[in-house]
Length: 493
Image (spheres, rainbow, N blue to C red):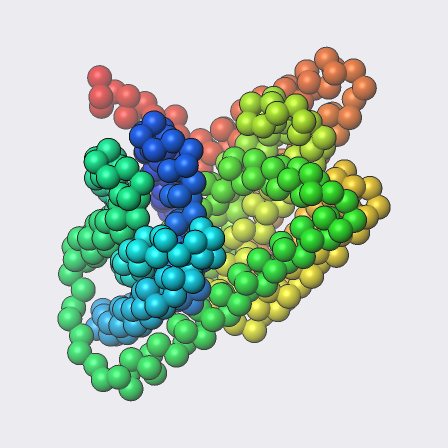
């Protein structure tokens, strides 16, 4: 493997490691904070905190208008520093306006939000403070977007870690002193800390100051707003699709089946979402910066596809193998009915990993119409139809079969349309890696049906160990992992 290819693979792995580590640290901080909150405030206090955060997040997502995602594409694709500074000025102005609108709307509706959230108007002052949190959280997300657009991974990781740490050391004393009355102020302070943290690191970028008229701001912001609106619309459609799926299950089945399906989905997401989030953080701005160069884009898509498969496949096989144990650990024996569904979802994760690098191409190119049709309409209509049909025919197991069919369709459609529309797709090297991994995944899944539990688990464990070892050596082949680990070990000794 050439030095350039190895360097590129190492950069991908470095970005994944940085953000994977950051997310793990954030999870640990939140676990510690959750334990302290439980001790200080009990279940009632945790319920209040959850209510306030569940009110804050949809408001923030709605008023952000998808702008943070579209701005990453815009900022990372501009090479001229003066022009980039001008667009950042536009983006910051738009985010300030949207954050102000969100805060004013939340404050104005605090009375009704209190009734909606707590069935009483007594907590209106809590919701008024949430307006402050919304304002600063939105500004913080804007600054983080700039860091991501510049691909300053270390700054972004430090910024994302500093806020939860600050929140831990400030929130806990507030809870200790003011108990329940300190929950809303602590969330507002956390928003302010998040903004201060992200703003501190964007100042290190030394972005040139830019003055511009409102007409220039609106002209430059039009493209970002249009793509942002498309992204937000597809997100809303996705939420509606989830609602319709749950409604169908509730109509033809029981509320328990909705809980079973959501539990299996939640476990799958918990085991894999961190990998996709970590890899996408650097991949999207990187792809956006080179999307006009088809050869470089093709190379990056293949490299990203290979790395994400090598990381996801072992996780998927482990999930297939120990699905009953995970259910018993995280849930109860009542949820054993979703073992097949959980294993089917684990196989589908590999399909998602295959489509993952391809699905960013249309956003990087700013192809709004294609993105809306494929991600907003086609994906959701197909998913509702398959899940509803599967559940109607065979309950939760039928939904598992439907997801497997949908995974095969997704891979075929994604590969075909990206090659047809953009002439970008996977090369022979990807398929020489992906086909054996797909075969081992299907074999592991099929082994779970062996009537003898002993033989079934021995087969799944053997396949998982063999495949994981193969993935390790393939990663080592691309980034010389063992040599890097030796160097770090000897450097510390």
